[in-house]
Image (cartoon, rainbow, N blue to C red):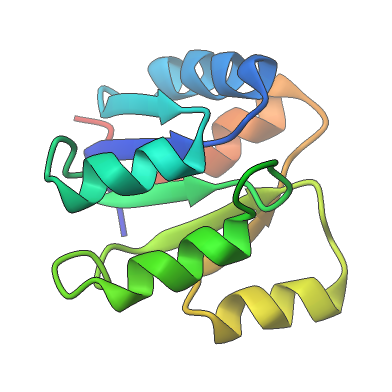
Length: 127
């Protein structure tokens, strides 16, 4: 499945910058990043943003990725948006837990730009 309107929720500005640069090289999808999951949830509920897919980090202050996932799945108009966990966490227990909370997929953040582009080219609309 490819998406044309991508939202990334991640508290690491550098990770967001790298994600955006890789995405721009493989796709013309619209990209939005929000570093605060509470703000992202508010904007989604108020329909200020309407992504096709959400790439979600797990390890964030204020609200964890799993807490965000729990909240979004409670919202009738948001629960169908695919959420792809995009995290450095790789433990099987965490992956299973994320999927049990409704995550569509789980991707471990790659160590290099080339691998990130390959991953994103599978998900992002190339135009």
